[in-house]
Length: 337
View 1: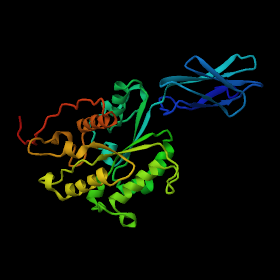
View 2: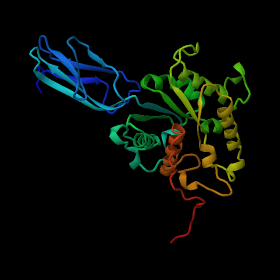
View 3: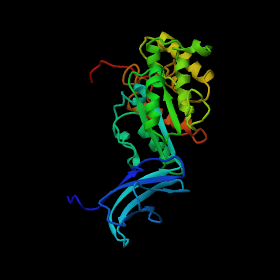
View 4: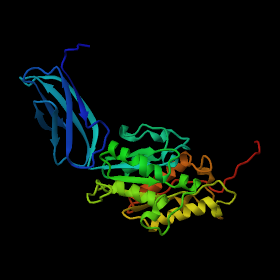
């Protein structure tokens, strides 16, 4: 390679990303720019803006909803093109959704990797509901401008998310406008008190106190003053049941999860209640969805697909999707065929 040859690269926005607003800030880095050279930014082969001084940057305004292409062209003083860089599938006026949770959000039990490569190159993964949910949003809505990011960490409790995770998550995803929160399974295993009815300092160390802090950090840019809204909507799903008991319906763990879910539905401020994963996955006298689980806690590939549909319907209650067909009442067999 010629070390003195002109070169340019688009620093932002990256390809396949989602911008939630209609302003598109573009930045390029250029090397070996000739005297009086400049950078031309072109949006969708139509709208042109230029900058002749580094750092090379411009802002396209009133960009319509949908996906776009950005070119950055390095030109000499005679306007001749020297080199260019192109980023495609840049979505605007979309939803940038961050999934915050534990190993269920992470998708540790997902045994079907094929559906984890989202269309348009938005997600390249191997587990979780995030890629299937991204595809459902992009296929069933007017524009393909949605992205769901997996920030689930195995073993996390509500305390971990509120005290050690969320600040970093929001810093790494500045375009976030919704969060899908699913926490509580590990709290139940660790016997964290639910905090039902608590107020003030009495909520410290409880599921309610931790989750309310998490919500406040998401909702307010200046936590704990809580005067400058972030315009991010926290959506908290009801925790699915654990199957680590002879009768999950009356197990101590699931009774604790019921209390956590009551906190979510009745006692948290500033949230939208999400999918009822507890009611769907809890076995009863008429259904048994053991076929959706990899073990006693984690949904398998089909279970994650069901979760993506339930979460889609939470995000789009006016136009819900039918849930996948599921065989129920399955039991393990030791009989050889």
